[in-house]
Amino acid sequence: MAAVLLALGVPLGVSLAAAQQQRVVVDRIDDTARFASLAQYITEGTASAGITAILKPGQPRPKTVPDERAQTLQKELDRYHAVYGINAGVFDRYGTPVAHAPHDWSLPDEGELHESFEVALASRPGHDPGQVWPWQHGRLAVAAPVVRDGDVVAVVVTDSPTDQMRARTLHGWLLIVAGECAALLVALAAALRLTGWVLRPVRVLDATTHDIATGRLKSRVAAAGGPPELRRLARSFNEMADNVEGVLEQQRAFVADASHQLRNPLSALLLRIDLLALELPQDNEEIASVRTEGKRLARVLDDLLDLALAEHAAADLRLTDIGELAAERVAAWRPVADDRGVRLTDQCPATTAWADPVALSSALDAVIDNALKFTPADEQVSVTVSSNGETSTVVVADGGPGLTDEELSRIGDRFWRSGRHQNINGSGLGLSICRALLAAGGGAMEYAHHEPRGLEVTVRVPRQEPRGE
Image 1 (cartoon, rainbow, N blue to C red):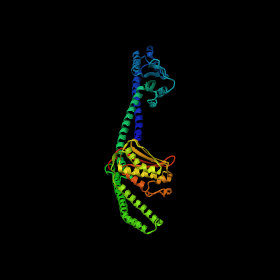
Image 2 (cartoon, rainbow, N blue to C red):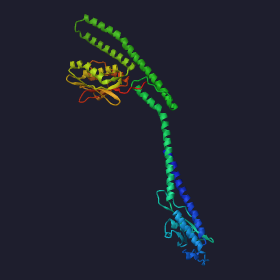
Image 3 (cartoon, rainbow, N blue to C red):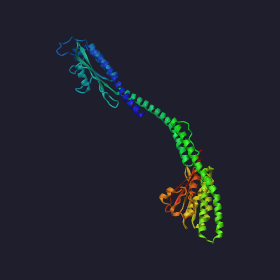
Image 4 (cartoon, rainbow, N blue to C red):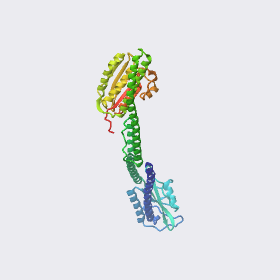
């Protein structure tokens, strides 16, 4: 739009300047024609009035003309100069002034004014003066021949200032610029409204996509407003989200049902293993190994069931004192830390956030338990609560061996465990369960290196109530 306005405004401004100058030139042509008619019959007989005669080359001395005509011409030129500030004069063929105002003004020997005089004296068609722009301080020269008996006997010359003409041109340009700026602002406002109307469904789609990515699978796009293509996209997105949610729901139901159905036969199998152990010699390694693997399988089934429930259950969000809840969990785990010789410290100032207290407690239990498992004796596990404008955080940092960059990228995946820690009890589902519990309430978990060694887990929960779905 700016380019279009510029393409229209520049020619319009040039045309306006040319029109202003042309109007001034036409006025000067009329003035010179009037003065030429007055000077047509002034002859040498007017010398007594201080006016030089106008004679044709070789022409005999003309009849004396009364002084009144010469005086009248001089008075007209004086009045013209006083009123309009324009230099004007009648010059004979040799450039000698016959009448002129002001009296100290004469025809220059060169320049545009002299060129106009020569053109008029030769009775050739004149040319328009060069364009005078508002930033220039030029003058307009216009000349007209004085003709008697078909011959040019003198020339009337006017030398006009251009201040008023340039001021009018500049004023017109300012009006054009103001009009174009107004048009540009109107176009900008219309474009903003149009783009807002077009992009509003895109913003809604982006927010809904983020909600689904963070675990709020019930979020959908309202297929209203915007162009028809975006409305169709919104409907297609909702259909896709419904299908994805259905598939995930079936997967969760399968995991939950399989975990529940396998627990009964596994419990019976473990019972028969215990009965069989009574018939075998004490400390039989095979029976002990079978019993250990059976109990490990039972823990995996329990964790799978917890994960399915965590992903399926809706969060019960409340305004919770995160500092108080974290301090309670630290106090509950301190005896375990003392038994393992690990220093468990906390800095838990009062800060509120929106969270499911049960889910957050379970997540903190899993993170603290994980930290105590991998932290050797005489090392420290710290729990720190802080907040900023948008979130409250609980940071659990341990002094264990930590993880590599590649392992950090995989932590939290289902059934993943570091190859260096396979001897420590666990199913590899604990942190996945924590992440699912937090995501249901708009929270998240982050992992990073803890200097000089160890792992740092950050639990984030929102301080503002999540928008309804």
